[in-house]
Length: 554
Image (cartoon, rainbow, N blue to C red; front, side, top):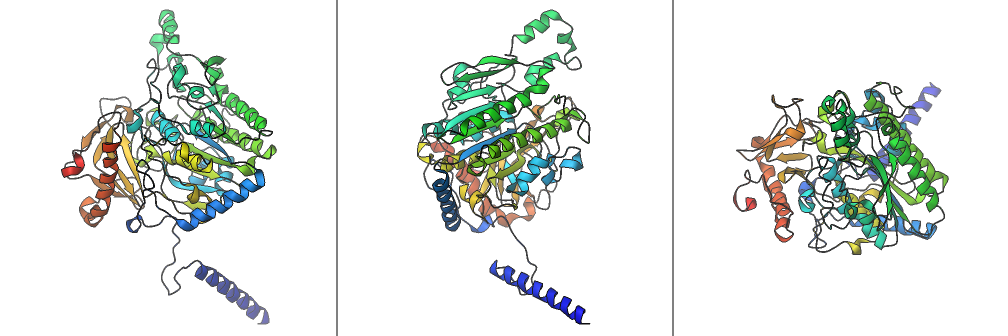
């Protein structure tokens, strides 16, 4: 009996302690269901404009102060501003990562990314653009593709027009005293002035275009009419520089590593070796650095490194490559730790878009509708891992909104280089440094806007997503029949479809007729967004506004 009473006392004490902790967190204790929210209700908050060319942001004064204190203490300790490492994977789905329900469940464990996520901040609503070139441009310039004109990937032979003079985060940080290095896939223009080393990076090493540009014409199953014809084969080889290139500022990059059907398997290994060597060289530097590391994997077609071929649980090439990418990320992080630079480095891990639907089974996994090339969640909601030991509170998971453009503005803020952002360009990115660094930080972003090329598709606001146009990618006259890059857009007749992504992540149940009270809040936010194009003219005409009546569509 005495033992039972002792145990009961222990339980009661534990409950009392837990209740006290909950009270300190301002949770209700009156019998109502207790819930913990990681994103505030944007219906009741307002965003503030800091400059006419900046996207309005929600101002959280307490978390801004907390972030400033942390950054000041770190600079006093290290004597310099933080390093920033952005790791951008290719075509990796939201659901490929273990902490997002993938990993072993989909046949490819990701222990390194899982560890970084659980020891850092995992974002469940980080948004890219529908495809690679637009996303890369958005990340590097802080601008939506409709502003830069980079609406789609350049096709083989087009060369790519480059960023058109838009100032990159690399250039901004370079002007502020950072060492800047680009490694990996570029896909933002091949001519000299468009190459990374001439738009703000001190040096570049990697493939200038997309992975399939180097291999698709060599694949017998895909192009036997080229592979079996020597004359056509020689002609096809002239369309691209079939090699990784390297170059420093002011120069044109030169071939340094030939890419063929065998060496394509070694590209991510070579990129990682270069990255590790770069990180080691920075150990003795008194300058902070910005490293933009863009992987080859897991873009189709996938040819795993020999050490990883068949080693995933699935034993399919894509899954093997996911395991390799996780290993390569581990190597980069280890080099930061071994050189005592980890504590002063923000690491961002994400993907340029969702999985490519046309290439099944050589494709990734998403629990959402659609994939690469679409503005459904499967195409634009991507993994988001932010890791910074001692600065980002470990174990955080947030559904706060984060746009790929926010990396630009946040990096500029962390590098004390925001004054270098040009006033002549509208910046769609928001400074999210306080969101990342505050122990219980909330997103400073109120909305996400969806664009398919020059077509305005809609907006996410809180848990609601309003699509004013229909994107149709399933057709009987395409191969395969689900083909986003052969899709079409149809204007909505009655104002679009409103989805609640919390209860309908597959976007199957449009609720607009039932959710009329939300329209007076959502509509002004769309109107505000579209009004920015009146002062800051886009590179091309806006399309897809037919469903919006009155002044908003003008």
